[in-house]
Length: 308
Length: 272
Ligand SMILES: Cc1cc2nc3c(=O)[nH]c(=O)nc-3n(C[C@H](O)[C@H](O)[C@H](O)COP(=O)(O)OP(=O)(O)OC[C@H]3O[C@@H](n4cnc5c(N)ncnc54)[C@H](O)[C@@H]3O)c2cc1C
Ligand SMILES: Cc1cc2nc3c(=O)[nH]c(=O)nc-3n(C[C@H](O)[C@H](O)[C@H](O)COP(=O)(O)O)c2cc1C
Ligand code: FES
Image (cartoon, rainbow over the protein chains, first blue to last red):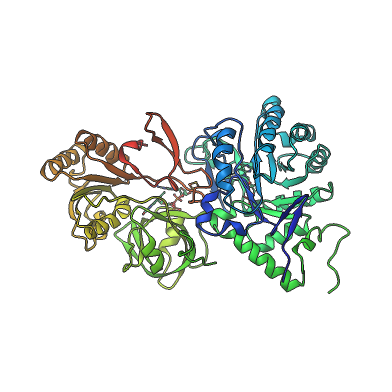
């Protein structure tokens, strides 16, 4: 028997596998039992309703996709009144992804969520544009990332997971900054900015122009970011980016992740998360790990596999 | 991984191809061995297909494909236009190959037991989506008249459309000018006068959608339309497949073709 139990701060997950924000919904319960997941992660909710971006919102590349969905949604009031009760039908800890345009808006929304029963943690999507910084993402710079997390921390007792962006020059500095600002865990990473052009029309293939790149081709970058963060902070990491198989998940854990999120792979295989959980158990059995948590950080400098 | 559809309404499954054959110059049909999924499928629903040829190559994302044949005693079938990389990979599959399918997905057509007659208007491969309606209607004792529009007789696929349902097909062709909008309008008016349908159905052409909306509003006949949109997840999770749909309050809302559709009320759809 392999123990897949996973602790992220005060939260205990049945296993380290959860969905990535924006690629998951209660609709997936048509395909498998969502209670088998380590946690549930909602689409990012914004304080006000948003229409989302012009179409096309998604385009495919050889081994991944670009998206510019634009976080369409009905806003925080509707989310608290309607989405939270729907999610509470399921057992795994509920992680609410929150996105906002200013530190004050992040703080206000976090305070509202903290008063709402049934939420295990807030995942702060600070990869979104900061309206007070010319629309540059909060997570681009250590100072703006830390300011958003600190603003939430001051108003919210729930655990806060800071979701970092690959679109930064110094991920370790951003990771340290959010840790110091009071983040309880770090989710790394959001999509990396990319572009595709339709050469017949000489226009970007996405309605919004640029988009976020995700999927298998993004994996080496996200894995590298996880590895760098692991050497910069002590709080738990949740690795995300291009994970499609249990082997991918093991790589992220060995690079320092305590848990993993799966996004784009669920579009190609809706059962991907279940396959990763099964495969993780198989890997641990085959290699003699009694607890999957023992995989975390094994590939980091100074660590190695115990002699067999 | 195979999850029993008995417990979960949507399956992800490798199904064995039992027939793969070209239809006319540009189309192809596939039939799969998946009796439980076929029995579960409803006309107007679709599957999300992982398009990999025999050598395993194909585009990264799945492709949505309407259910062309379904039912308790019919293999699950798809009929498609070989258009780009995905559909080319599907057309390269041979009997005995495996195809990963996710489905059945989406909201299908509704047939009301009190109806006595329906009229279907389809253009090109749009008929694949509407074809299973003919069998379903026949089982309910509802008569079907269909106006099928195509380039020429080779593209018409009346046999692929009607199967054994006994649907009465009125072909209209670009080749002889009978598919011209004015001619189709005259034909529809004649059918509405001669044998007023209780409902009308369409798919596949913006021009025909707008025509059918106008005429059925004039004759106060309800209708349904199956819409298409590029898809990511096919399940309702990514919001890339939205289309503006008229809301009861007169405004429009973005609805997901994969989840709230693909079938929408005829008058609520907007042309594209
Ligand atoms: C619900 C639904 C049911 C469908 N049923 C049928 C059917 O029964 N028979 C049939 O021939 N076709 C059907 N289509 C259209 C079919 O999905 C596209 O023709 C197919 O995706 C083209 O893929 P490709 O790789 O061959 O072409 P490409 O042109 O190379 O595809 C490029 C991209 O465009 C997208 N795309 C292109 N055209 C369409 C389209 N019309 N709809 C959605 N996405 C598109 C593809 O998903 C892909 O991302 C249906 C579409 C939807 C949404
Ligand atoms: C269609 C789509 C929508 C997304 N929406 C969000 C979102 O709302 N909030 C967020 O923090 N990340 C969002 N992401 C990013 C994912 O959560 C994830 O970080 C990224 O896709 C990398 O993981 P993957 O390669 O497994 O998909 C989205 C990704 C995709 C593909
Ligand atoms: S294809 Fe993802 S929501 Fe419709």
